[in-house]
Image (cartoon, rainbow, N blue to C red; front, side, top):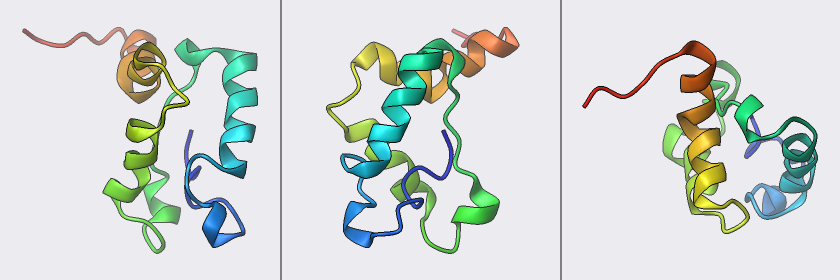
Length: 87
């Protein structure tokens, strides 16, 4: 999931709860959260959004459960690469 926040053509709809989430919801439904990896697409997005602005909508939305958010924001990456947090 990259470029989601800055991808809307209408500035008022750039917030996560608007048109972009509808497209993301279809991806989540089709592929599942364990196969979706969040990313910033920094090389393209830095001109219009900083890191905090890119991640905040995913962290604050009420459209994701805590489990879905954890999987999307790092859990799926850890699973795909066999990484685990060091205690």
